[in-house]
Image (tube, rainbow, N blue to C red):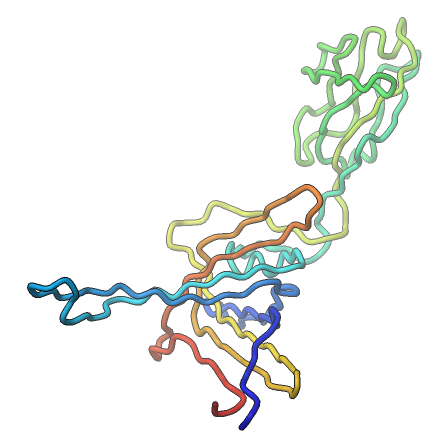
Length: 267
């Protein structure tokens, strides 16, 4: 008797867009879980007794779920968002957390980073006490209050911080500050999600492979011909990894194929 097929572990999951040409295959990133569930509606016919005398199946809903260990912008975009403006080249945002700057008695301003790459102000605290300063409009600076020249976010400000009162400048004191801000960087990817029209739906094919090799190698393969993601979740937890999660609705392709499962042997 042949050793029966045993499937163990999450395997490998490849996603390929089907609504665009060409649809580049993307490994979702060390898949942690992958599930497929078929649920049918049924209708029972009753006579005069307790149990039905017939039952018929109506529509069948095929759904799935997968979780990945790697945070991939490519996978998120292909599976759920379908943004045409996804950038794989340098267009990232770098955080500068609690960078220390010190005002002087001769100047009431501090230049943070480069005026060309400064992106957004994310707040200031006093280095000594940890108490926060309040951001105000330019010209309203005082002790405990500051402004940023340009005033805006996402690249419209210049990174020039202005202070007043006892926090620096003539009549003030040299004050150590912890400034948190973001700057533009040439590293990383950028996925800007725009508000697309209702009905915009990225679709994809899913190819799944797993191989449990005890006592012998026996691969098991599943292909989902058409799928659409109904949910994307990112959950950040204390003392745990962020595991991107996708829920998928699966449906038939133009040839009425829903999915195929390939078994290594008859059993």
